[in-house]
Image (cartoon, rainbow, N blue to C red):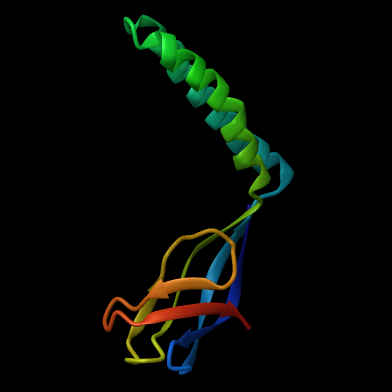
Length: 123
């Protein structure tokens, strides 16, 4: 698991700009496989546990057994995640915490102080 810090440009709807940074976590193939197998084991474990529940086990057990490989393949395909970051709101000039999110750019966020809509882009 490697972590990178990336510089970002924070833009408000009125085209004011400030800078910030985000932490990007990158997983190699081994870590992605471990995460996927943990999720698969969890979902299949829940499915096996649901065998003891009367009536609903007819629906829950097959659902969890089918959902396991699907969810595991989605988790395996994800190779990076934005852990969060910080910057300054270009509108009110206050500290702006950037939340954990998918690695899809640009990121849309709201300032916690002035509630201004912001767009966060890579520099």
